[in-house]
Amino acid sequence: MNLDNVIATRKNKAIYLDGDKVIKSFDKDFSKADILNEALNQARVEETDIKIPKLLEVTKIKDKWAIVMEYIPGKTLEQLMKENPKKMDEYLNYFVDLQMHIFTQKAPLLNKLKDKMNRKISESPIDATTRYELHTRLDGMPKHNKVCHGDFNPSNIIISDKDGDAYVIDWSHATQGNASADVARSYLLFSLNYGEEIANKYLDIFSKKSDTAKQYIQKWIPIVAASQLVKGKPEEREFLLKWTDVVDYE
Image (cartoon, rainbow, N blue to C red):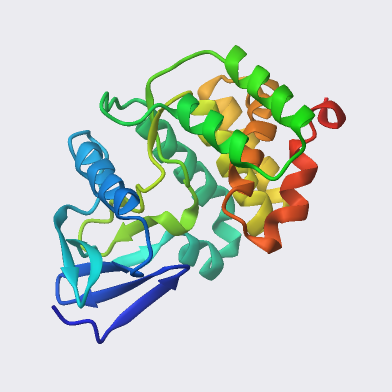
């Protein structure tokens, strides 16, 4: 396999284009279990009606684990938003419609969202009192079994040059659970990357289209913010800590 054409780099991984294949290569110290779980997530989501790149193989290249998948030529929704800012409302509606379609799907072998959130809260760098409040809140949330992407943002949506359809990538954080948790994460990601005005517009659109109370989605935000803190991104820390304070938020 050819690793000459780097198309993206992330912490602990690099993504290459080789003809009609995309190769995601992980650093040697990256958890083998996490790599295999990501591939398994992708295989399980492939069995739904969500359009995603096909998983081709999991292999080792130069002593590094790699996931090989189908290449989808096109632009990300994030690129289109930057190129056509006047069409932001149209793109946000498209984003919400796609997200709502994902929530109609079931993948019963995916990990449970509540289990993952409880683990992330326990690992988060916040005080014990706040962790207790977040665990308690999470425990009281309704249990659902909808497919949740876990990092649903415009950079993970490719609009295909071939058929104009949307393909969703990066299923490493996928779970099954309550859709409003995934919406809360998308809200935080919009806030971080696009600003509060766009984030609030997204939340308004989703609330209206899905007939879901904004207050209910907002109850998930401190839980999701705590889980996001575990990623350890310094540029996000202050913003996320503000959202984890359950008492202040209420």
